[in-house]
Length: 175
Length: 175
Length: 175
Image (cartoon, rainbow over all chains, first blue to last red; front, side, top):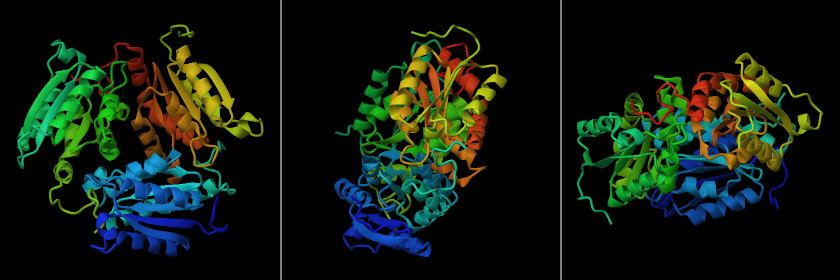
């Protein structure tokens, strides 16, 4: 089903969820920040899209990208409290297995920057072999979230790929 | 549908969930503590009720109060491990969208007072335009929880009302 | 329904979830570590089993043990990111009520040992009167998790049994 060529380099999709950026009313700053981070890590950015805060648009792209064989999908935006913020619900709808610890740590680390971090409602988890992580919409929130991912993402991707990953807490290993 | 007059001041419902307080066997200390906190913040306390640990009673009041247009509902009690503790399940049943970071932070801050904080099972989230937050039953647990809410609740309510809130992590904003 | 004799000493089931240990390809180190911890606390270890990473096997044993009247079931393994890791999903399927704070704290304390702690997907909660807790597969992760349980497990079991537990945050008590 995967349409992405096999490659040791992880393939990433970056999804900005924002009514205003989607309508061209405001420049997307957060998405490009994730793209830069990926390039600095020498990941392949296979897709970068902007969609409005619509459940169907989010679900549709996440599903397609995961089923195409992405290793990692990072979203930004739509995790807050306004009426239009539905990214966590749309994401949960496509996940096979949740990874709540990533979302917990993103919120906790975000507290260093702002107390509002605790109202970010982002989720993280696995669809097939793809890790999907919601980041907040603000560029600062994105940077804090990427700092959390930094220390675990290569290991997580290796486990999802079934590579001979170093044994550890993430595997089924009890050694 | 809202029956509560429009007013810049947030409208709050306070719900004590306790078999014994409901039966009049024990004075409710925690509910009044929340009421005091609301008054100190100049919130309007529209409702204050005591119900037994019954799912139907909890669901019924939460639904009615949220659909009446409350900005905030704070519950106390029924979040623990006894057989009768069903407040989190009853609350989740009425939520449209969860806000897990608030519940995580209430537990985490509670650790300063007692290790038992990690067995509090409270949830938080949004129904329509209403933020609903479960606090533990003890007055100490309530005070710790209110201290967590203190730093985010005005911003959260503004986002739920669709006011022109300061841009931040809670909104759909990626600026 | 309980088949376990009444006794003030808590009855515990220990479940190792591992394809390799189940196949006899690798010695189970983590399960015995939990058994030792139980004995040091003078708990009765009623069951200790090893099953492969199969949802049906995990669900079947957890259900049987809880319905037999165990006070506590501790699992190790299967909480990670590999394709076969399904322990959290199997556990959630048998829970009546989740206790997310225990899983949050296990991950958070685990950060002292490894950043990979945040990709552990374990859950905790209650079925009937039984507390069920997922630990990571590694012996180090197990030890860290048991240290978290240490401070709350006697109180949690007392509340689940309906004993006259000390009033506190875990009960429905608002005193």
